[in-house]
Picture 1 (cartoon, rainbow, N blue to C red):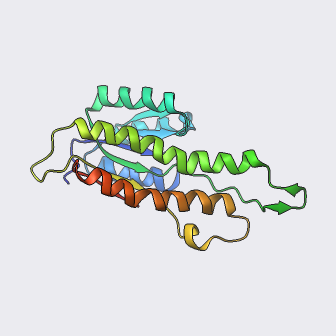
Picture 2: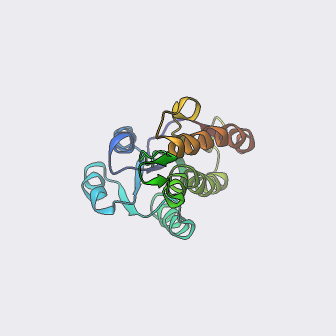
Length: 186
């Protein structure tokens, strides 16, 4: 897929893999929408890439819906989604202070798994409305999984579970969305 001139959303764009991905997509000519909870950190990247910053929690359905609608209004239908938003705080199931707090586990799953699905569903809906290119493609979704999904270490239960969910989510999503000309990979 030629991404020049297309709308691309990158989550977790304020740093690390997300930032590098956003820069690469912008260099390839995509119009990049940058998503991260840390909105101030996105401003410099938005200026450097000609992109647009959107600060919100990827697990928040209403915030994501508003942002994707605004992104479509500015850049047209989404053609690329790269989900890099993720957190990996370490924590043992039973540590020095007792059992892991359930809200700590929930937070990791909310960002890493639910956030990935939340943006996937919205980007896929945008892609499905777009005209296919000459090859019949409407878009591509890239989910960031991890080897921790299959080989998590001590203290990574939440992270491993969330990335296992991302890995398990990707194949059925790819099968479902293929009929619409949307590729899904992890």
